[in-house]
Image 1 (cartoon, rainbow, N blue to C red):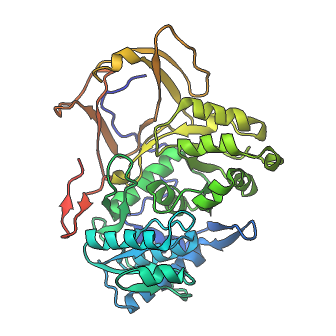
Image 2 (cartoon, one colour):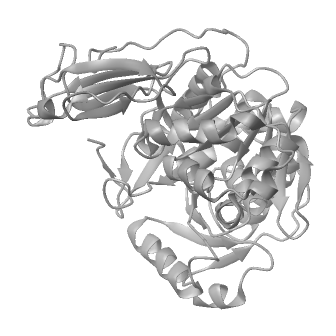
Image 3 (cartoon, rainbow, N blue to C red):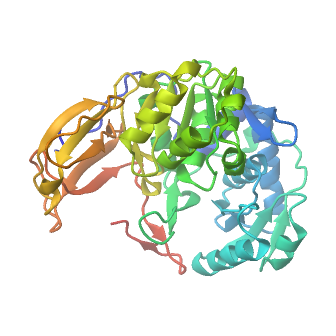
Length: 442
């Protein structure tokens, strides 16, 4: 186990299992024509999933794209998608992409943000982004919110289906959408995601997850987050899999709802940041856990925040009686600037944890590895304080990764800390400025 060294991309372990599309529009058109997957959206009022096929969802989305153009929005302009419902968001997102309009999904959280807070967020984006053509809202949206939004507001109301043959391929280096960063390490910034970047990352995800036939991906993550968008509905299209979606509010009001849904749809793949696993372990109601079956779950990815080994161990310990296998839990590293995936263990790899001496971290240079263990093995307390670091896997297919020192020099030694540097087709060209130019990603 090493903390550094340069990594080279690995060849796919399943060449040809899923074709890589040159652009996102070609992927959408292909799935609208022959896709076998479905999208299941949870309805809290009925405690059931509403289901629509990939083909029907996408053909309706293509109709929504035609509606957008009919309102005067032009290809290349940005539209802000302000829809709290996953199905309405995806319909507008896929519709915009299909006609060359550039969508940016805005965080709309009715349970947490009042109408004025959302309107202020939209106004800030209209100021920071160039050439915003409109804000798109869903039918039945909060009238108070709609009234407060500045600029043109469009409602895409019951678009009729449009055949996939009308959707033209895109230039791989043209802009597919704008991803607003989460602001974890700095203020939120608009990342330009090209068609090449997102399709390269989807190919890497399909390879690394080893997705096969009859997969079901389930998420409660928000679609305005890169893991919620690329890691589930877009990955579902790339792998022709079923996708089941809850909202963050569905999860936060009752974390056992997530677990029940995993069993109900026989999900094979899900994900959560560390806080979600800790929250579920702490808050899950034992009475509501009866009958939950997690035995079909093959992949539970933990990312988006620093990964804590003890949190993962406690989660597996709490839910192993419901069929959660220890090998299903894996950790990874991603960033919006790379569309999503940067590193992740291979499907058959076991995640590992190393312990390093705290005293060696004083200068963040050479460190001493005191022990290595499996991810879910309990920690043994040593004579001196140590810090556990969870392995986040190897760089994804198509990603070159290396570490550099503060002066920018490349690190070639093992067990040395440094700043992560990546290169590859998945990496975005830059952050979008208000004048239409790009700031480099550094």
